[in-house]
Length: 78
Image 1: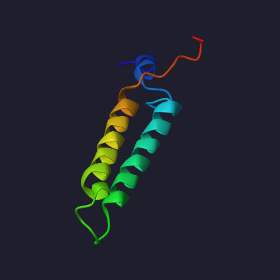
Image 2: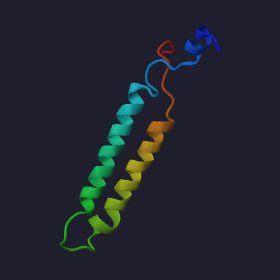
Image 3: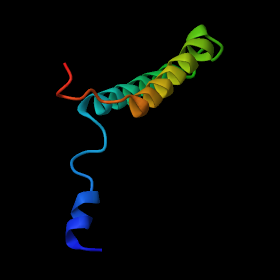
């Protein structure tokens, strides 16, 4: 393989767009909040620990999937 062919196939820049990384960091924060809602030793059968926290964690993971699959907008197409 010639040097010119190698440089043409090498990726340039980041894999995802800036928006994807922002969504992914937001999803990590949402998952962390969900796990914080699950912590504690008093009243382990409360609504927050049994229902709300798992829903927040699942929403955070879903947001992570969206962050990975979202197509970046092209800068030339406005």
